Structures are given as structure tokens and as C-alpha cells.
Image 1 (tube, one colour):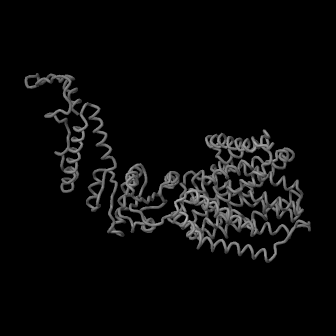
Image 2 (cartoon, rainbow, N blue to C red):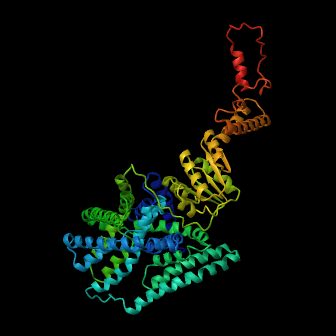
Image 3 (cartoon, rainbow, N blue to C red):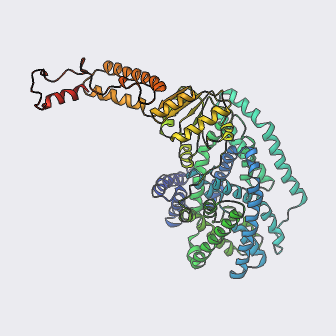
Length: 614
């Protein structure tokens, strides 16, 4: 009788259940989903021992990093990647070299490691966790912020650095049989694999997806997306390079494809599930016995590692021009060891550079430091300068072309106006100078970019020359005036629709010749008055006619004020209730006041009727 194998189903249910419970819980208490996944893995595996063999799950879950790098590549066009070359090959290179050398020196001085073991341990620990860091950046919506870009550049170089580090192991090996050296043919294969991937991605992938898209088969498009990601990863692995690097290159090559958004949507579910599984697998594979047996060493090594790396990263990022807050955020995001350390230390142990016990201890140090990453990020926020607001890059690389409407300012007024435009099928590009607003709104999928609408170069980058209408929806009157003045001077053919601050501002904007303006509270106040009248007993048609009359009188008054000044047209305003035709039938008959005692004060009847009439 064949065993149906329910343990597999049980393990799957346990992992899914742990993720569903732990991730939202840790997110709710402010520790982040990453630590939640990790805690769930520790509880299910080492603590309760429901699942054994976390290493096997980890080998599969590492595909989550592959998918993550592919999606990141889709967001980075080659031009944008080229713009990061200084951070990647400058800051990234210096960080690995300096951090690795310092940690290697500490290993020789305080841990008694031999020179080869110290080199591998130091440079292995100099690498940070791509999975943990990028997941935290994504959770905070900081991927496109300045420190997010710096952190990503450093992580990208670290992914490249794993190749020469692995090649270094045979050179440092004392001569074990398992040690092999990278030959010239192997190096040639690596270069050829990268070149082949670039050529295929450049000239074949877009036509392939065009053919598949024309068939209309959604499942085939998903299969093709998975084929591209996994195929590029396998090619790089065959060439002795990183799987994640192959997926990243494929993503970059497809970043300018018209199918970029669909590919991202197809891959995203797999990325999310596998990346969460990766964090849980790290927890599952945690060797608690090693930690308990060496808890004093780990308790000292982990803080020292994280403190040294944070200090060096802060100093180096400052040296390369980062401001204090950006340097602090980067330093406290990347102080942990990385998942590539697992591979490096295991290979070094196989090559007899150090013992299996030392490799297990280093892996435990890396794992604990990864688990403390969310805590490190929280601690780092205490070192920020609260009086200085952080900005993000004015990056318009995601614009594929001009939108019909360029909206400047996206506060409450702009958000509501955009709903009308988007609901009508109109494309809208939004720029706003509030970094906090841009970061928060981007999470909801709006096409919003950080930029100052008072600068000509920003307006041009945002597509003002191709926009049919420019909607100025900024909050402050002075800012609005400067933007209108700039646009009318530099782009005189642009149709301007402007949010005005008040009546006087409306008159000024009309004098400037803007095509359309509206006071920010006018329409809402009219609707408020209509609903109030209806609540007092007026029927809907009557309330609507009254609102039209008020609108007409207001427009007539504005026309008079444009000539006579702000005090003109007062006769167009209602300052007392309209008495000839009461809006609501009085609740009691009114008395004639002709024969009433003029010195006698009025009763509450007339006041009540007046209130009803208003």
C-alpha cells in the first residue's frame, strides 16, 4: 500500500498557518512582517519541532530572493542603473573591502582565527541580507527614497562580490581534495553567460511576450514569466554566478518593455509567498543547540558585528556625500550578516579552511543578526534629526510619456479632483513637494512623483509640454501664484486650471488670465447649504434652484468686483432671509407689526420664523 504522504500537507498547513498568524501580529505591534515570519519559523521548528530539515525548505525558499531581484530589476531601467554606478561600484566596493578587512582583523585578534579563516569569515560577514533589507524597505515604502537607493546599490555590489569570494576559497584552502580553482575556461563561461543573457533579453524577450500576449492566454503569460526568471537564474548558476543576479539582469532588460507591469503582477504573488517562506526557513534552520552552547560568544559577537558594520557604513556613506539621516538609515538597515554567508561558510568548511563547528557558529551569528534587523531599524530612528525632513529623489524615469493632465499638488483637493479625472479615463501625472505625502500615496498605486512645481526643469521632466491641462492644486496661495507665474512665462500655451485660496485670490487669478479657477471651499459650501435646506423641509428641486441662484449671484458679484474692487457687488449678497417667498411654510401664523408697540421687544415667534426661513 502506497503511503499518501500527509506530512507534506501537514508541513504546508503549519507554514501557512504560522505566516497568517505571526506576520499580521508582528506588523500590528510595530516589529514588521520579517520578524514575524522568522519567529513563526523558530516556534514551528526548533522550539516545537513540528518540522525538521529547514535547510531543505531554505534551498527552495531562496527562489523568493530570485523573484525579488527580478521585480527590482523591472523597476530599474538601464539609465537609472547607470545613474547608480557610483554607489554600486564606488561605495559598494569600498564598503565590502573596508568592512571585510576590519572584521577579518578582529577575527585574528580576538577570535584566534588563522589568516585564511579570518579572510573568509570577515568578508562573509561584510555582506548584508538582501532579503531582509529590501523587504523592510518595501514595507516602509522607502525603495525609491535616497537611502533606499543607496542601500540597494550596496546590496547589489555585495551580490556581485559573492563570486570572487567563492573563487577565493580554493586559493586559501590548505589543499583538501574538495577544493577546486576557477580556471580560465570557467571564467570565460561566466562572461559568455552574462553576454548571452543580455543579448537574449535585449532582442528576443519582448517579441516573445508580444506573441504570447496576442494569444490572450493568461496562464501562458504567467508560465513565460516564470520561465524567464528561473531560466535566467539557472543560466547564471551554471556559469558559477548568483541566481539572484541572473534574475536581476533579466528584470533590468525588461524594464523598458511594454509588458513590464503585467510581468510584475504575474510574479508578485510567487515573490511574496516564497520570500515569506525564506524568512520562515531561516527560523526553521536555526540551530538552538549551537546558540545555547555558545550563547556567550554569540551574545558578544552579534552586537560587535552589527555595531562595527553600522559604524563603518555610516562613515563611508557620509564620505560618499550622504546626509546624516540617510547615512543613519542605511547604516542601521544593513548591519546584519547576509544569506550568502550560509553558502560561503559552508563552502569554506568543505574546503577545510575552518571546522564545521566554526561554520555553524558563524551561521548562527548571521542568523541572529538577521533576526535583529527590524530592531536595529527601530533603534536607528532614534539617531535621526527630527528637525530636518527627509527628501526623496526627483525621479521621473517611470514616465513612459506625457499624461493628459499634469496635476501639481496632491492634498485633499487634488485627491478628490483626481478621482473625477481618473474615473473619466483621463491619464494623470501628479507631482508633489511633500516627501511624506508622496511616500504614503505611492502605496495606493497613484502615478505620483516627488518634485517642486516651482522649478521649470521639474515641470519639463514631468511632461508639461505634452499635457493638455495643468491643474494647480497646491495648498498655499503664494506657492500657487509662483507656479502660475512660472508656467505663464515659460509655457504660455498651457491651459491652466487653478485652485484658488479665497475670493480675492480668485480675482487675482482671473486678472492673470487663467482659463479656469475655483475656490477650494465653494462647491462644498453650496452642497452643504443645499443639504441643510432639505433637512429643514425644503424639497430637493427647490434647494437646487436656490443653489443655482446663489451661484449666479456670486458670479455676477465677481464680475463687478473685477471692476470696482473687493467691496463691489454687495447688493448681490443675501444678508437677511428672503421674506416674500418663504422657503418653508411657517409653523404658525405671523402677526402684523404695524400696530405693535414699537418700544416693546419682539417675541421669540418672529425669531423662530426667521430661523425657519433661513
